[in-house]
Length: 385
Ligand code: FES
Ligand SMILES: [Fe+2]
Image (cartoon, rainbow, N blue to C red; front, side):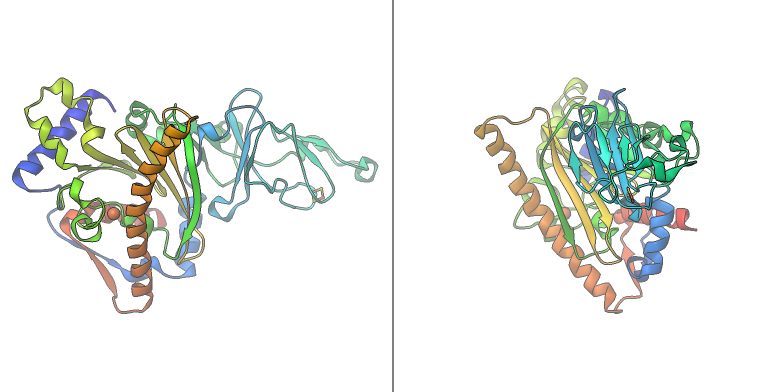
């Protein structure tokens, strides 16, 4: 993040700390409880969000070389994402053009020369074109050049691999401009070194809650004092946070008590130390969180797995791959704190899901200073309308 922006954010945070105030809107808002419930709602979200928008599915460092790949079922669509010989990532529907079998079953792999369907062994190159058909004599008149894997848009921006889970309509459409989608957040993320980071401690897990709760529980500072009393509250303030909307995305800044040190510091210091004195949390719409910490970032991708279940992939984006026990112990100790606190959040998210499913509340209320949640849901509503 550029110095000027860090200075502005640090000063805004310091002003709130001095006045015991927080970013806020004028009034509270409400949201219908059934926003979190039901198959029909999820079907719409899959169609209008997860299959229509650029969505980050991996970190760039997970597929560094040609033939490295990941598979994904973004939006309920089987996808294969491959780094090509030209160094660019391409994505395809992971569906055999013979009779429709899933071509690649593994979640990820390295240096693959060809993808071979497990059913009758039709094979596909890294660029998706159809390489070979066993017993080809039985397919007379079938044009192999039109039977490559079907492309979907893919691209890289700010260290993340982005895919749109719907057929590419043209060559140009297949070259996904995720940077444009991120807007000025791309510069923020680049400035924090996400693009050159390495993935450590990748975890996959499910929680019994609607995918949107996975974001609601992270986007306000109102819960810190009560929900994290026994863990991380001591380093933060009670209900002090900054919220900025950047296109459909959000940037929130939760200052740490240590930020008071900056009150007497010159701009040169403020311009480089925001991440040390605040949690800077980016919500990349719809379903990625990047939590910037003093010397690394934690990344969470959350995908719906039914109306009341969410599947997370999360990892620690660290500046160097840890190669010693000491380095691993350092990041492990960090992650013990991170996942200790996030598990407190997840338990509350699951509690909310059960509560809303009971029918007790027709609506939920967002306080004026819980406006990041209101923005998030308003953005979804706009795209579903
Ligand atoms: S379905 Fe893939 S080779 Fe037959
Ligand atoms: Fe929390």
